[in-house]
Each structure stands twice: as C-alpha cells, then as structure tokens.
Amino acid sequence: MTTPTLDRSIADLRQTLAGRVITADDPDYDQARSITLGGIDPRPAVIVRVADADDVAQAIAVARSTGLELAVRSGGHSGAGHGTTDGGLVIDVTDMKGLDIEVEGRTAWAGSGLTAGEYSAAAGEHGLATGFGDTGSVGIGGITTGGGIGYLVRKFGMTIDDLLAAEIVTADGQVLHVDADHHPDLFWAIRGGGGNFGVVTRFRFRLHDVSEFTGGLLVLPATAAIVAGFIAAATAAPDELSTICNVMPCPPLPFVAQEHHGKLVIFGLIAYAARPTPRPARSLRCAPSRHRSATWSARWRTRRSIRPRTRTTTRRPSPGTCSWTGSTTRPRP
Image (cartoon, rainbow, N blue to C red; front, side, top):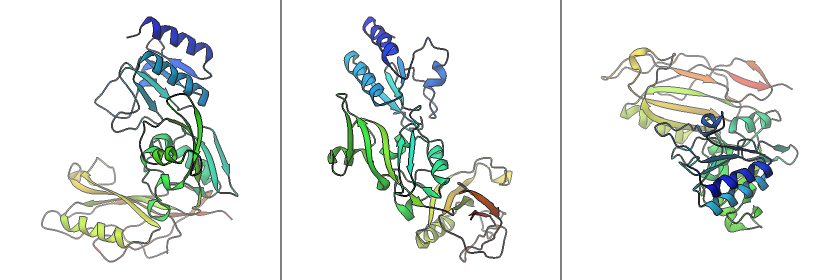
C-alpha cells in the first residue's frame, strides 16, 4: 500500500536513479521480489535495483523520510528472510557486479551484487581464490557480512579473515571507505556482524593461490559410530581439507539407491585445496551394521576448475569403513 508521499518519492527516484525502481505495477515485480526462503510471500512497496553508492544513499533517504522498513538484498539466500520486507523498501544490489582483480598484489575489489560463483570463476582464471560458502549462487554481500564458512575455511579461514576494506553507505547517507585504519569500529562490525551497520557496496578481498582443488560429496549412513568417525577423520585431516557436514534425511540423489532416500544420512561436502596423492581405486562400500547393510555412494567432482586439463587419478582414504573413487584437475602449463 502506498501513500501520496511515497508515490512522490518513487517518482523522484525514477527520475534521478541510475538504477531501476520496481513496484507492483511493473511486470517483473514478482520475479524481483522472489527469494530462496520458502514459506513466506512478502510484497515490498518498492524495490530499488541500485547501480552505485549514490543510488544506495538516495534509497536510504526515501526509507528514512517515509518511515518504510528497509531491507537489503544481495543474493536472496537469507535463511531468516532479511533480504526482503512486507510493505517496505528493498535495496537490491544485484546489479553491482564490478570486479577489479589485482593479480600481482593478490587482492580484488568486488561489487556486493556478485555471487560467490561469479567471483570465484573470474579469480580462478588466474589460479586465485577467496573462500566463501558452499553455494555458488549466494551473494557475497550477505555471506561476507555474516562471516563466511566454506570450502577453504581450514586452510585460509573465514571470508571475513580475507576482508581488507569496504565501501559502505551509512544510515545518514554518507559513503565511507572503511578498513583497519579508517573507521575501524565500523570495519570490525561488518566483519560478521550480519547487518544494521550500513549498506556495503564494494569489498576488497585478499586472494590466495589455489591452483589445484578437488571436491565432492560423500553420503554415509548416520549411525553414531560413523558420525563419530567422520568427525574424528575431519579433525585429524590436514588444513588443506575442509568439510561441511550435515546429518539429514537423504534427498532423492540419483547415485544413492532408492531404498535409502528419506533415511538419516551424513551429507558430507569435502574439499581438498592441494594436489592429491594418487592411490589405487576402490568403490565406496560401508561395512554392514545391525541397522543396515548396503552400498553407499561418494560423488567426487571439481567444484572450481583452474584452466583445467582433466586427467583421472585415484585415491584411497585413511583406514576406516569407506573408500571412494574420483578425479582431480591439473592446470595447464
């Protein structure tokens, strides 16, 4: 529901904004307001697809003058629905995808509308990477201000450990450069604070040499012994190996027998940021237990290729109940 004051503000924004203003009257409104989280159907009064920091400042001014609730959307993956609002104003940074990679200095200035996959693909062309989460479609704006735990976390730390500086628009419309020496308290707050400190429009990240990377999915029955063994093996693994483990009902994966769909499993995402040692191949088979006896699956694949020329190698895990086969990628000379 709009008011005469809001209508005038929206009309003014359409005239001055470099980006776009989207309301319920626009044909792409439903697409623009969609988010990943299910079970809710918020309808913002206005969505502002900003193009730069000045657009952000104008949108904040409208929210402040009209009293509208303000939400900020990067990739739309917030599990709490923070990227949208019902009847309020959404600042959508999706179109802010500028990326300036300094290969020699191993740093990058990145627009907050980039997804983790877009950033990683561009950096990977140079054999470089910054650690984000476990899903390529997640926006770097949300995952960075939320902390950022992903496939490189044991080797290089969280995303915020590689955050060197940022451009941020505050509630009073100021555009600030923040880092360890400039507005250090604000810089501290945006490194994992989650929000309510301003709207970040650009990030400066540290890049790491990740010229070889192997990763994939391991699915195991979630018995107490296997869960404990997985945790012990992950803890004892070298820093080059990171795991993201979920205990959950097995989804209908095509490479897991249908009889196991819906049953409790370990859903392990595993990444190795180094060159693996070739070992003899084995198929994955879990030892029988009184609860179940079956062949389970591990599907290894390269999550990010660095100018790949693929050749197949095989490996054997540490002693235990399971083994797997897979492939790695090696960079071209």
